[in-house]
Amino acid sequence: MEFQVTVLGANSAIPAHGRNQTSQLVNIGNTALLIDCGEGAQIQLRKFKLKFSKIDFIFISHLHGDHYFGLMGLISSFHLNKRKTLLTIFGPNGLDEIITVQLKHSNTRLNFPLRFVATDTAGKQLILEEKNFRVFSIPLKHRLPCTGFLVQEKPRLLNLIKEKLQQNKLPIEAINSLRRGKDVLDEEGAVRFAVKDFTHPPKVPRAYAYCSDTAFDLELIPHIQGVNLLYHEATFGTDEEERAAETLHSTAAQAAIIAKMANVGKLLLGHFSSRYIDLAPLLEEARAEFQASYLSEEGITYKIE
Ligand SMILES: [Zn+2]
Ligand SMILES: [Zn+2]
Image (cartoon, rainbow, N blue to C red; front, side, top):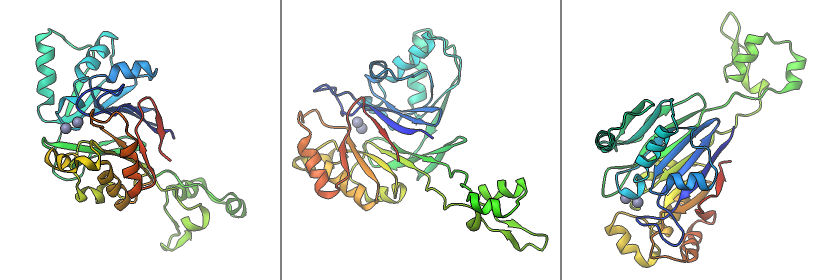
């Protein structure tokens, strides 16, 4: 199953140095999720020729404008393109009101149903369950109520060991049960065919975590433990560590410490301050803590594997 993230914007408060405010497209199976929707989001989607009519779910982390000022534009384009299918938006309380008031005063009656689901910061919560994946919200520490998002593949069916099947004639129900990870029992309740004898060890489901905006926060670690890819904000370099603490943002090195302690596969740094034209020093500071650190690049697709 396809599972990848395309970064549309990786700058913080203002667009600068060719970088846009925060937004990214996550493709999982046939579903497209948009995480945050900074001002340039739909322009970036067009520029990189990404199909955005397929976006059925939008997740907004918090109500600082650099994370949602592109949302009304995108909703408006969906309307003008005669979208008919349901669009679900997850975000903090108040976002529904912001959308409603703009639709009201532009006298717009959308062609498609729009559903709003409020997020909150009371612990990790399951907010979306689909056939192949789940999405959880994760509380982040910021100046406004803010959540990250964890996209997790569901456990897949197990692969059967062909030789074992050939040696034993198994009824189809037994095969289905083994693929789902369930031992087959006889009438007395004893194990007749064991999952471990007939299947290859299960593949660990893949996961992607998005954490922006947030102060350096060790409480985040259990929520993102072992994810394949972590996107963590790195607004500042170590030179501005004090400012990062004051504004409830993180430095690149702090993002890398979180990645290391959570034992993630790879770290993507983003949400860069416009004070940095050259981001190489931020990358260097992160790599000193966690080697598998990378700078987010707009238009680049990162596979989750
Ligand atoms: Zn921000
Ligand atoms: Zn913010």
